[in-house]
Length: 282
Ligand code: SF4
Image (cartoon, rainbow, N blue to C red; front, side):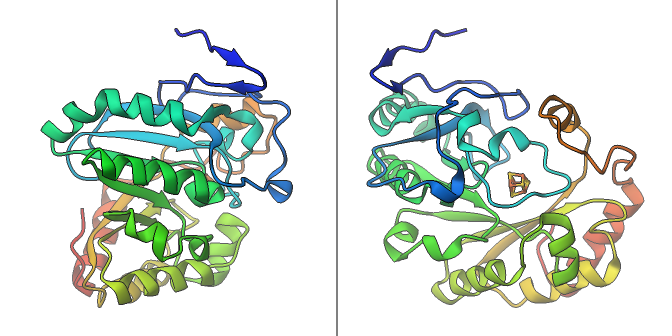
């Protein structure tokens, strides 16, 4: 357990931990997302970071979870990343210094840095500067994003990225809206832009029984992704209930309390749909 060191109104200590830990009201004075203007990205808000991740890109990685997300996915396991105020306010300098401590090990393990969230493009200036610093340290860089704010990732931003992990949460616009409360189109536009420039992408698809499992919905994602040569993998993530307690802690209505985990038969069917469309799936 570390004690945050505080200078002025900036809390420097970024919490090491896990995406499954609950964080709440660590920066109660942080603005609401709609009022947030981050300036040059010299500081930002972070939920936590994990070391030793083997699932958020190639090799062994540090995954940094930033605060702020414009989506409201019914199955979100990190609703404590939706608002900036639930994260810690951290300086870019402190993040980069901490990253530097890990850089030799990450390079040796052929890994790097992945910025996730929340949605990393909510804090596009902050995340771009972190990614740029990571590249200067010789690290492989990635973000995990819904793509909803893809227009904020300008060419300068994408230059700092070796990989985009793109969550395409549904192929049917109505299902997407029901699952996330936001439209699908910006994500598809971002995916097409990444394909046109040949940027490596891993697509993630969260498989939620009775929400995203309709065969036609899966088929729409598979057919959209299959022709994209830049998409290296489609990863099917079976729904789980690990984040349910966070909804309760935050006093939010959790609609999936009775939804079972995706069965192995269902996962196999969806893998088969992606494979049959011509995708590399795992
Ligand atoms: S995009 Fe991610 S962080 Fe945002 S609501 Fe959906 S699952 Fe949660």
